[in-house]
Image (cartoon, rainbow, N blue to C red; front, side):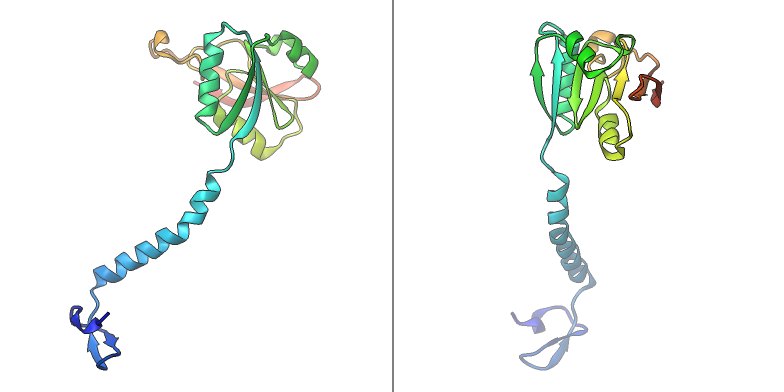
Length: 175
């Protein structure tokens, strides 16, 4: 490519040893393209494989299905069992008073009820010494309990971190 046809400037056309100018705009475009190409491997790394999540629920529970969709949209690959969740909740050691309509198991942690996907990601990232997370009951406005039928209503609720001894602390407040 002949550089002497570029705008007057500071680079050299080695075929004729005379100076030529390259527009700042072309340099910036080249730098932007190079930066974008270098960022492609990083973007690919962020799109990791979905995280496996196993959930037990009642077959007829619509809000559980909506929560599963929320989790799938946020990077989880869900395997659902429509066998109810009371027995598995007891087997996993979560007290009934902290229960909800579905129970999930992920990375060795119990996730009970309508816990937001961001909080599950945080749990997996921080890896606390705990049994897992719970949103007891079925608060309106939580994931799966936030559809149009609720008219935009949002109840205050807490996501609780459940320790192995059954005690809890607030993991995240929702208002």
